[in-house]
Length: 475
Image 1 (spheres, rainbow, N blue to C red):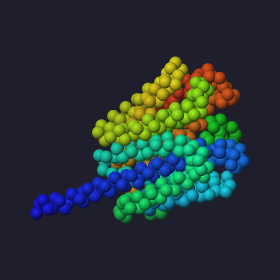
Image 2 (tube, helix red, strand yellow):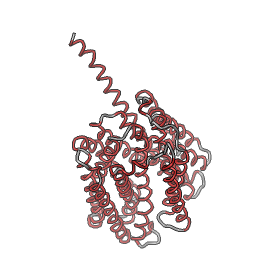
Image 3 (cartoon, helix red, strand yellow):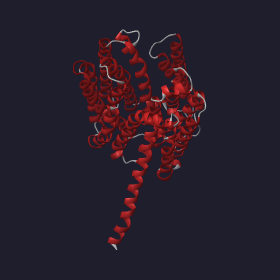
Image 4 (spheres, rainbow, N blue to C red):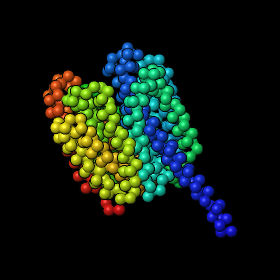
């Protein structure tokens, strides 16, 4: 009888393990789609400018609309998941992303494409925020690091795959194919999520009723004004950009006042007093700024500093995401084995070394030096990301996982936006060239020295934050 009982329970245990793997597959596919949504469109901008007979300043809104929608909405949709249920909101997000992809492919005009990309960005915000939240809902604590590492890997794969896949699709079937390709992925993701994502009990949802609409609108204005100032101004703060920054400050102050007084705030301000969370968010923003610097400065150095062709620049630039994809899962496993404390310190220390390497080595060793420096920096980022996400989400209450994961993703997005604008401006100023695209090699190399020295300072600042916060407390 005992043996028969064992035989009956083993399939159930095996079935549970298979279900857990398929749940994680659904979350990984959601992360891949969100990353692919932005990276696959970048390569299409020249083609779209020609197709719609539009200047670059107009066509770039195809990218900006997506990024702005993600940035503005990511905390709010995370909170909505806490109130309504992570499963329901994530399923809606997958459906929205998929339908918006179809609308993008069918768009007859540029501005209809921009509107569809905005809807696609809203869906991506849900995918980014609630995929991380669901890891806390469904994965045992001792395996959260591995799960976070997998999500980081899928994000890197989406970033690396987008330009090459987009180029092939545009050449073979036209620009609409870059959006159509996401339809089968979205449908498959929806089926997996619908079948295997567990629902929450009412006890697991946010205990307070209502959704903080005034707070949501004020936060949206704050983030939109800041993001527009950074992206349109490109780090040069003229009158318009300064006005947007002022609007962001005023809206942010009003947001804080509203959150203090409302019964059901979008963000519990008390959680920001936690040294664990505030330290994680600060480090995440600093580190994302450093990583974006490589994407802003790298192409100019490779093309103008080393004289590489566009094809070779693309190949070399894909090295970073590929290394990140290969190192994400091992990084997550190291977090599970060693704990977040040691891995955060190790990852940030490696990033400091990688930033200094980018500052010093390429000028002497050329392309080999550049690739070596990227091979140092990127695994450090993978280690930090897996450990920091795990440390942030591991002990968050169930009714706060959506909003906290949204804040974590928001800090990353703000870091990317700041890196693209401010660090781009640092590079331009350090190069002392009116036109970076036509600057001589020695000017580009000088600018690279200064910019990555600044990036090393930012990485060092993140390491200092890590040392001073409870994020790295002994486990």
